[in-house]
Length: 56
Image (cartoon, rainbow, N blue to C red; front, top):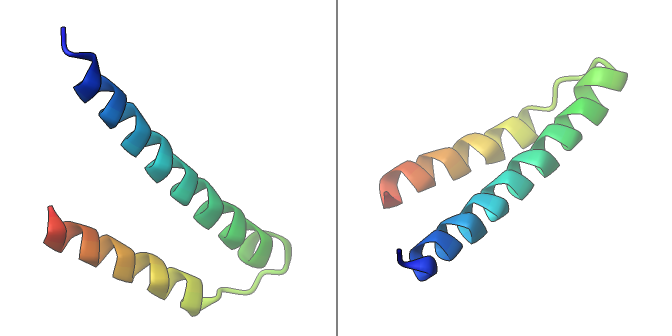
């Protein structure tokens, strides 16, 4: 079994999970507590998803 590939996968998974966690916390603070929908945060998330889809 090759451990280098598994380790690289786990590192990339942890990075993506951290990015999603920060995004969710930001939306929860703005939309959950105040009731405001900030299109700027959602726009950056959509831009990142589009860029990720183009790269892969």
